Amino acid sequence: QQQVKQSPQSLIVQKGGISIINCAYENTAFDYFPWYQQFPGKGPALLIAIRPDVSEKKEGRFTISFNKSAKQFSLHIMDSQPGDSATYFCAASRFGAGTSGSRLTFGEGTQLTVNP
Amino acid sequence: NAGVTQTPKFRVLKTGQSMTLLCAQDMNHEYMYWYRQDPGMGLRLIHYSVGEGTTAKGEVPDGYNVSRLKKQNFLLGLESAAPSQTSVYFCASSYPPLGHREAFFGQGTRLTVV
Image (cartoon, rainbow over all chains, first blue to last red; front, side, top):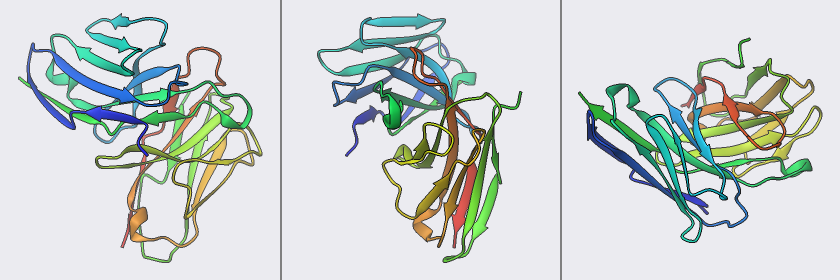
């Protein structure tokens, strides 16, 4: 059961364009929604994250939009650059003490290519 | 400060062979995780640990075992490797949840089972 669904699977954007990646989740107990960026041959690294008490968070060219009622959130990359070419994963987690931990549930990933 | 280090980076196994993947972190993190990454399936949690001496099952634990004898190390074992275990394995660690819950990942181990 995939609790976090991500689309599209791949995305090609021209330099300077806007890249948009969407995610939908099922578990309303999730309370932390990060995006991870992964370059080839590397491990994922945290890019930006949001909590459900805000509808938008912006860091530089990267923005997360969050719609709690629709259980959806999206990553927008403004002025996309060739250096942004990577795989992007959305994720969700729920605060859990003790043995539950704070496990991240990941989406399927989106391979972004930004053409020069 | 090396962060999260995985050993080895690449490995080819024959079906039925066993091996251990080592993960070491130098950030004094309590929580450690093992994920596998397969095309189109994202990262799926295999096992995790919330502290030294503890382990728990994740989404896809079958065929794997883990141990956390020391806080800084988390070992993933394959007792009898199968072709279905061909994947890229990532170890991650994080500080206990107090607001921001960033997970730090290693560079991965690419395992091929033939």
